[in-house]
Image (cartoon, rainbow, N blue to C red; front, side):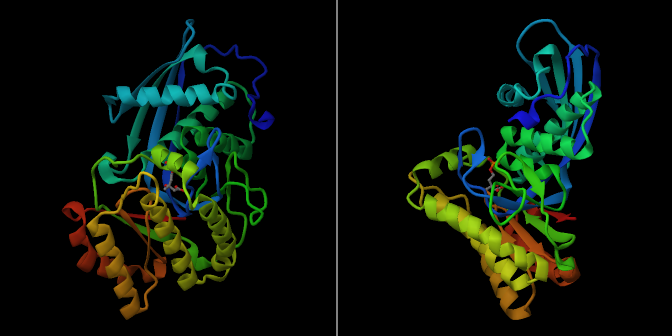
Amino acid sequence: MEEFQSKLKQTEFRQSGHVSARCPSNIALVKYWGKRGKQIPMNPSLSFTLTNSYTQTELKFRPKEQDGYRVTVYLDGMLKEGFAQRIHTFFERIEAYVPFLQDFEFEVYTHNTFPHSSGIASSASGMGALALCLVQMEENMGAGFTEDEKLRKASFLARLGSGSACRSVYHGITVWGETDSVKGSSDYYAIPYPYEIHRDFQRFQDTILLIDEGQKEVSSSAGHKLMEEHPYAKQRFFSANENLGKLIPILKEGNLPEFGKLVEHEALSLHAMMMTSDPAYLLMLPNTLNVIRKVWEFRESMSANLFFTLDAGANVHLLYPEKEMETCMNFIKEELLSYCISKKFIEDFSF
Ligand code: PMV
């Protein structure tokens, strides 16, 4: 992709230094599940970028002479050897666009505001923050980016680290994956949602219930892979695309009931794909279902706008408008926390 080739005229910059960036996690409303080639999504997705759940990363660099990558990663000050391998793979994928990666040795100091075992994917915020650091480094070397170019390149690079990470670079609602419904959308990077958003969807709340803290049994990459031979894949990609189109008037009009119906359908479809994969697997746990049932009962009896979504795990994201915060939080605290590990939950929102 020509647009993302490095803008540096020459890479004679040989100074030590550091850059830092913060990037939040995100929760998809229309889910990305299935990819091809180099992290190209099989369907478009749309997400809320979160606020409180973010990664803060500092990238220190020092010039070096030898070929190859030298990266060490520290999470909360502790050396993480496993992470370095993932960053090597990331560097290999992005080197054509960031040509100075072999000229420096890097130390990555990273911190997540959410617990590592919380089930919030740190890959989206982590890869997003690292991509932002690299673009900042290129800028400091004289690239001369505009603010828009910087973010777009960071989104492009982040995608090559972890698909959904490309959506985290922008706040609010973002879209990734080419679709006729959204002007300017691309398979290569995310864009900020370009259409009108009703005020009820501003500062939308996401209370994340921690149902499981363990390591997931099947990783997202294995899940994406299983979509390649999945008997219902074609229909799923079609329906995600269609759902994204349907969401546009819903977001504009502030149609909360239709929003909930569509978002819950997306979450359940994602998990239905897992259950009908070969081999089949389940990431929901009994308490995931208990929470869903309670939410449905509550909605029925209170006519409140409280909805759920799920990512590739057992935890439940509870979504509701800020104006219904008091009713929803009272219900969550009284009725749902008993299903969480040690009553743990995270309060977040998208702005
Ligand atoms: O970005 P990945 O490869 O971790 O996949 C993320 C997949 C979901 O979280 C389930 C859906 C999404 O669009 O974020």
